Figure (cartoon, rainbow, N blue to C red):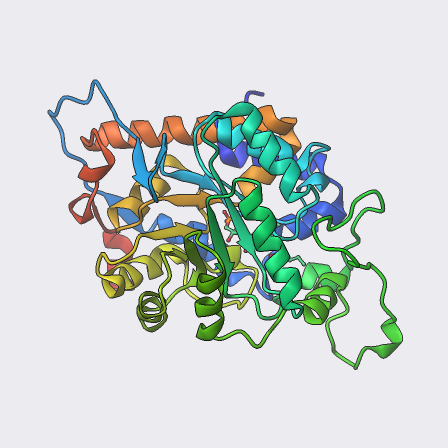
Length: 374
Ligand SMILES: Cc1cc2nc3c(=O)[nH]c(=O)nc-3n(C[C@H](O)[C@H](O)[C@H](O)COP(=O)(O)O)c2cc1C
Ligand SMILES: CCCCC(=O)C(=O)O
């Protein structure tokens, strides 16, 4: 059967990946209410299409931080991509850069920052790369990651702020995740798999990932750390994991260059809002001072259109990158992107929009079926 949409790629990946990788990639936290809602919430909005406009030419280009992109659809940072395909992050970055869109590399990757920078250069002379940063307890480790990203041609730092501790992912507690022995968290030395389970208190999360996080990642971050990062690099700083107006305003106050409305793909706190439902609040609070981007549950061209209509500059896909890798490495990620691009172009054309700047709140409304509940 031919792959027709991103959900087909997910179905394929479910059959192809082992349960260790699939549990880690697919899971959300606790009851996975937020994970499900990220996707379902898009369906609670409707597009208001316009007709009899010349849609023979559709332009999906735009500019952000002085760089041109062919589509407002980027690849989000997801950890440990070599479990999906032997090429891992290198396959993903080649696919994104050959399509002139951004690839975001996770701090917790299975390919080095330098390998990923070089792989992008091989397919593009204008590399599109952002680096996702977790702040380690050891500030020098953090600084080292920033310097290496700068030296490898990364164009922005994404500071993830929704993960002072890893969320409670029940599949990982029931069947503890194991990093396959041929892989390592290669950017960070001393990432050990083993810990003494005897030291766990009753009820404590026994997952290695949760323990790794608790031992290495700094849970005491405050807005001062955003100021600190701004002071040590000239790269734009993008704050990822903001859902409410109060924090959006603080991002502007403390000098963030952009915001990503994100709930970490439903993997952190459960029972928090879907990102598409949080977007309008954040966009209003920011009041056009900095760009607002979104990730979480984007699977269709109409999802992208709806996010742009509610004020996003661009969106990211996380898991679909992993499903594309599992399907066919770099070519599978290209297929995933091309499907989404084609769907998005069609959504624009059938709504009567020929450029991204035309997509605005006039093109969206709450579905009447849900309107009273929204
Ligand atoms: C398997 C997996 C690993 C992830 N790893 C990271 C990470 O290392 N850093 C980070 O900031 N976000 C991470 N995320 C969150 C993504 O960047 C993104 O917010 C989320 O996947 C978007 O939702 P989607 O998967 O529904 O597209 C991860 C998500 C998944 C599914
Ligand atoms: C220790 C890996 C954490 C990566 C991450 O952010 C996630 O799994 O959501």
